[in-house]
Length: 250
Length: 250
Image 1 (cartoon, rainbow over the protein chains, first blue to last red):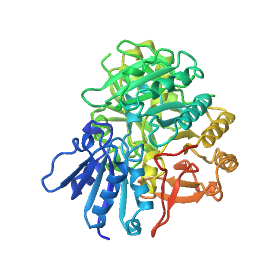
Image 2 (cartoon, rainbow over the protein chains, first blue to last red):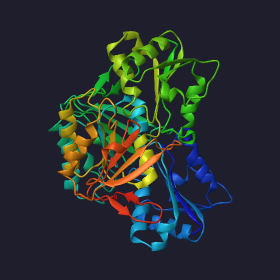
Image 3 (cartoon, chains in turn cyan, brown):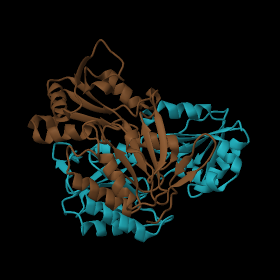
Image 4 (cartoon, helix red, strand yellow):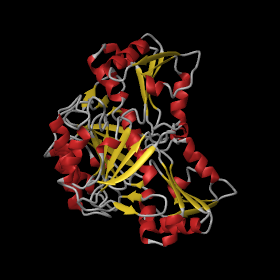
């Protein structure tokens, strides 16, 4: 087959945090496929066809992109952050595995990006400075009991925790339940940061402790970072810095 | 104080995976501070002073950079990958916390980058497609028992695992011990990828199962990705793709 598929991570939002390889792949595409919020970040190009879809249809979008590539188009699937982190890359390969055998012969390239987790961490210091993990709080695709078991395992073992998809209008209670569990494991003074729309004009960064963390401050654009017992707060004029020392025992 | 400090992540190696913000910060610096291997990736600029140091002296390097900034210099600390992930950002904030009180008034910016973990994952599909974690196997700064306890916790809970600093000439046994532990927890067919020098001319990607993973293929430039029981292998001409489905139970 002559078509190709690039799965492109745009980074967290600011154009100067988007890798040049991502920009080049978007420029070279004949067709762009993606969720409207992310597509809006890609400059219009009259030579390209834009296929804008709803966010909840990830597998359908992946199949659509693969079908276009199999027809010989140069397709770019547009993803936010890093395309491999709770984003489109996994959906594309899931579609490949269960789809048309010819899709396995397509040229598929994943172009990595700066994830929301790293952009958020950079804005508040170095909270991911030791062992860390990333968990999606969405229970659309996995049982909530699995989420709770994973939260418990990593909090007890001393990981810093990054929470993606903390809550939404359709899922308003997950972050509250996660905090409730974590308060039974972590010291009350453990730092928590909520970073919304990082690197965008409406960016909002708020620092709490696990004791007073307010779930109502989070939405679907929020990345929640929960320190370990080792995470330190450096008080200073203009807002604290958080960091997790490179060495830490559980 | 008028000086400033930027802690810059260069990304995994290829220049087109380095964010424009990182490039701009390097260009604007009067002084560059970093380990020689990473400094070699920054183009020479006759207007800049380069302070090249040995990799093991992270805290000394951080204090040196802060001292220069406090003298009014525009300093860039050069880090590989993302500066906040097992890299220089944590060392800088550790130096700030325990150092000269005036350092807290410095303008310090962390510029995030594409980590080795995400670049490696992108080369083999979407192995980080569900909940995942990152662990440094170095026991220079934390007890080995902590490493083992963390590996056990996340493997049992169904996370994909990214291992940084898997081994070196001075630490030749850690990866073997980690695989030995994981073989008691994970199904024998669980995929393992070793990605060395990702995005560099001498890049090498090898796919194993946990049953046959060969620790001798890893060195300090290797990122090791260990799937969960849910991680899938898509066989195809020219090398398999790995991906972890977005939904997965432990």
